[in-house]
Length: 351
Image (cartoon, rainbow, N blue to C red; front, top):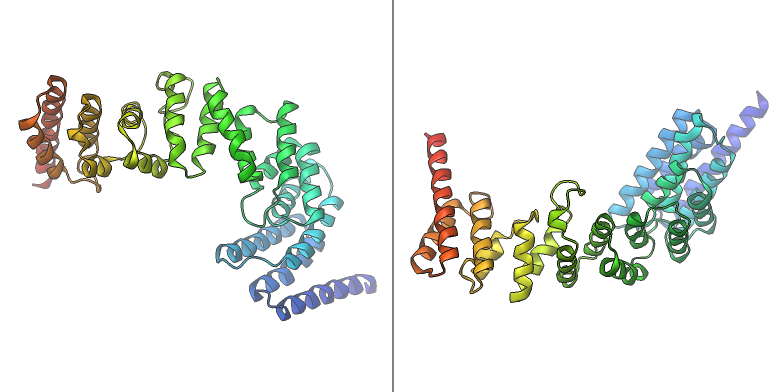
């Protein structure tokens, strides 16, 4: 009993003094309190209590990061070292799998720049179980203080070479590990890969860079690979297009790029570009194809918050009086008939 009491007292004093020191050094008191509250449970509690304490500590750290108040290195260093010790002492069995995964998640999320944390996460990624590897890959680079960097980047490529990590998943993980270094590699894959699913994953990772200038190349390769004819892809073949980036691309697109953009819209791009169509008056474009797809797109989204149905109908009626191209006239008449039906149904519902 005396030994247990002594251990508890030493643990409490160590945590209390750390919390006092953190507060004195300007650490957020919520974090100091979370550490003081949770570390004894993590180090001495039962499995469920340890998992809940880890989860609470992680949530407190996450809130602090989101408020734009980054965690001090000293805080992360001390906590990650103690969590690493507990992870290494835990049993590697099925009963402890959930707890071990939570340890790895928290250490990966807040161990960036902490040597002991970085080495543990890299070792786990390379030598750990598939379940722990998935946790690592889902967590690296998710915040400014998460484990990431060149060594992680190189290990991801190593896992791909060894056949442990599927080729299609690599671009996303590389961008998390080292965003700047990954860009040329992702671009190379977008330009060269022949597998459709691998291309979609690489293109999605590239669009995450929020760069409209890459959309033209992505659309060109999408047509080369006949993605609109891809039954092996889930849902619409262009479901993965980044909506804000694609919309900005259409806003600035030249004539050739517009044709590629409208081809994407025609074949399932889940993007509402009606406001751009109206602003640029693409329903009056000199290219009949751009004109036709713009008109069809306006009818499709008419009545939604972006473009009122009555406004679309008025614009298309005005265009009908001036249009001379037979193919465009046919589309105009068809879409105006569809709008009239929509209007009738709306009026019946409103009675």
